Length: 213
Image 1 (tube, helix red, strand yellow):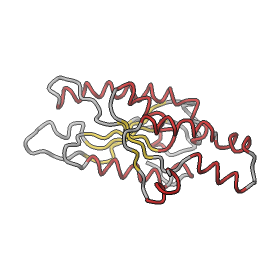
Image 2 (cartoon, rainbow, N blue to C red):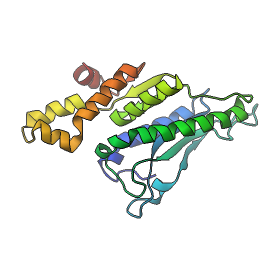
Image 3 (spheres, helix red, strand yellow):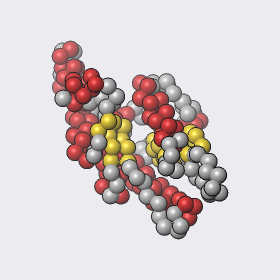
Image 4 (tube, one colour):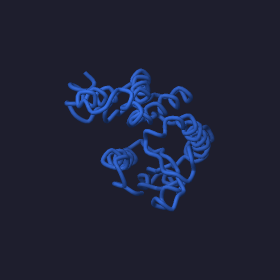
């Protein structure tokens, strides 16, 4: 896993990865899957092309021989968009539905696998879908609806606040801002995600007071 390659692989990604690892170590949590995009290109680290990457092993249960077989935290890379080209997050919006379809297929398959391992032959479904940032929030809302499981949202930042700050700087018009950041689509996705989420998680009091208002 490569961190710090650009602004899309910085602190937020480390936060999400560490959250997945921590969740997998909690009692009662068998498996955590962290979905992202699969890319095969010589211009980026080889790990982007790996379909599955273990982040941490699950907790061992001395009373259950099956525990650990598929448990733990994993990065699951879904192929969507151009297979051999890295895209910045602003260019991923047209491919969200393809990502959701791929993630849903993985979840359906894994529900059967886990059902055989720990569910007594019955499918084991996710307890929750957690979306981080606008694009993943949009995806999580669609997956939550398809699977009828709760959704959680961590926005990290909001498009409306970013738009307000950029307009105050006076360097770009609304049209230019939208062209660069796809800001209107981001805002629409965030508002859909907020409507779909049961809890909304923030990192600081400042987010609550100044962003979420």
